[in-house]
Length: 117
Length: 114
Image (cartoon, rainbow over all chains, first blue to last red; front, side, top):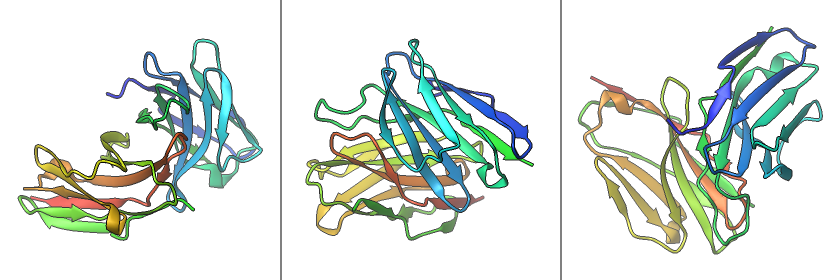
């Protein structure tokens, strides 16, 4: 158990809908990262938040957005869902965001499996 | 450009065999970090090891060992005396210095048969 929690574990929805995925980082970690894992694209970095602020952006679609709250939990919002958005969405956390002269280990949650029908 | 290549898509071995998973990376940075993660059938990603670019010593942890060779930009992972529980997808990742975006390889699926 990495200490990172994600809810829900599974989500089934229809095209055009909007969903929210939730992540709680390990105790003491300030950074949260979101990744998408699909069969054809592999593990793709979406976005990083550090202590409530967006720190890095990857291949995140405009239909997707995220935020990190004062208690450091994070939510990933996916809207106007398409069939191709079906994937496993991971949240990871690390102690720092960047700086400090090191690259921190990212610890991953169990993932949320999203199925868009 | 930052890139990680895991050329072996899938490997099948019989229990107790040794197996090596290859990882080749590309980076122009002189300081960087390399990681291995395991994704068992249950789906979660489990951290295995973190190594920085200045530490080329091989590491052994039980049946697991890692061989880091900067000269060939490789960070290979060997499982000795494989077990069925080792069946999983293994990912190699590159973490550039001072920047927490990871670059993952495409993964190697290891099947260990009894």
